[in-house]
Image (cartoon, rainbow, N blue to C red; front, top):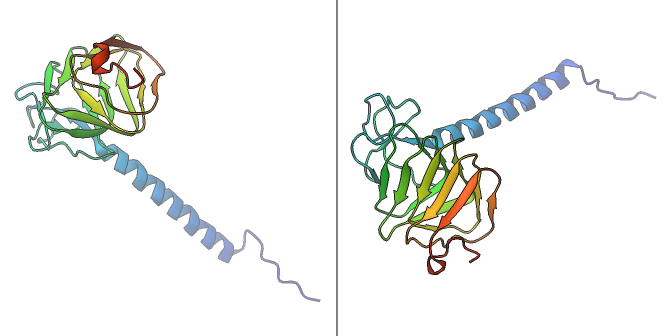
Length: 193
C-alpha cells in the first residue's frame, strides 16, 4: 500500500508557506503604516521648522495647521477620522477648536496647551487615549463626546476645565498621571457625574 505523505520541507510546501508568511507581513506593514499616517502634529507655521502655535491657533477641518513630526512639512488640514491622532508639541498656547472634530488619541508633549471651542465638540473615537508627557500639564475646556469611554495615560497632568460638557459615554480610566476636574457638576466633569 502506497501512502501519499507530503513533507513540510518539500519545495511545494515551502513555497506555499512562504507566500502565506509574505501575505501576513504585507498585511501587518499596511496596518502599521495606516496608523503612522494618521498621526498629525499641530503646526500652524507650515513648512517652517518648528511645531506648535506659530501663527493661527485654529483647529478645524479646513485650515492647514497640521503636519508631520519635525515641523518641516507643508501644512495639511485635520483628517477628522476615527483613526486621527493629534499631537501637540513645540510652542504651546490656546487652541481654538471652531468645529466639531473626531480624534482617536491626543498627545501633549509640552505644557501650556489649552483646547477650547465655543459650541464645538471633540468626539473621542473608540479606544481613545489622552496622554500628557512626564512633568507636563494640559487642559481641555470644550465639550467632549463619543461612545466608548476614555483613557488618561499620563504620566503628566490633564485638566478637564471650563464650561464644556463632557458627554462621552463609557468608562473613564486613569492608567497614569493625574486627571484634574475643574468643572461644575452641571457641566459634567466626567460622564458618570
